[in-house]
Image (cartoon, each protein chain N blue to C red):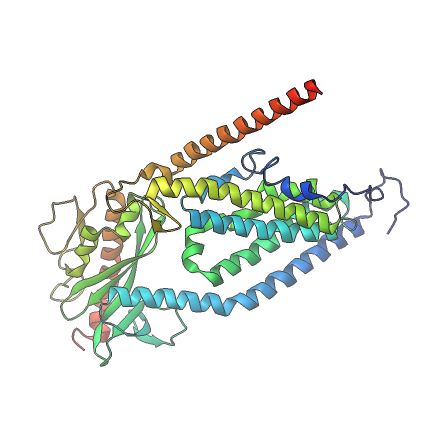
Length: 216
Length: 222
């Protein structure tokens, strides 16, 4: 049995925003890059993938947190994987029921949410140690952060690579799309661009905080 | 539950198995529930997608019926039975046969390309074409589904049979862009050679296999 529940970290705004910015799964922790690169060739695919992943994150976080005092440490990973796979299967059916076009566009990456390390990471590092409501809020924050990151990638790639945004033509007929951006190499270019942006902003903030601490 | 046991002691194997078993049962319950709820919607989506594709490759068709055809004959199937069907007949509002929609598949650049083409048995030509499933490179290979010049190949592609109706008189082939000289040739897309060849191969293989059967069991002009 796990030791008696530690005093849970206080629930605050940070529980939610952690995943949005400071620990953004894609741009800061560099987790879940496989779907982040593979299905972000259009903003719509990116959004759908983000929503699907968020659903799995929230549901598995909820269940793992509910069962956290029942699951023995020795079989926890196996249990988490079963729980995650369950919700991925449900998502898979749901997307097929909503739109086959979307399902075909996302291809194998729906099933591959099972092995998205963001989800298992959250289950192990957060949901298994925190009460249900905290886990729910934290998972939601992570999911929104993941979706945001995917949209950042997918939006730029679709605009440059197809000249459209969510399928809406932006530049008129004469625009010659940079097809490379919807291909895998373009995914790397755009990811690199966002990573530079994020780390520049983070460094600047850290420097400001250090200077403020010195001045105080 | 042995709550008071110090940490180094292992929980009993029974407890481990019971936990995993319990979670697996819960999982099974949830998955089956989701399946039961979504199955009719998924089936309807598949039917609608195929219906749309069949009408797309058979211009003017408004009614579809499913068949399974092999050497022993042509078996009509109920409307919902799409999985077994390998031939779809399309009729117009007056019940006249427009043609048959036939599936073809061949290895493309990334994966198998699945296509559907419309066959007019009276004129012995392909009258329409659409891509059912492909993961060809966006911007290059995926033009097989949208490129207007390429799609124009499939308004009157010759697939006539030999006089004894056992094979295609001239097997469909894909040629380099701009080099089409015969009605049974497909003008390829430069930059998407492998994908356009796959389309040609898929149509040729299915046509070679099924058109003689259609002639034999459905007749040439009904």
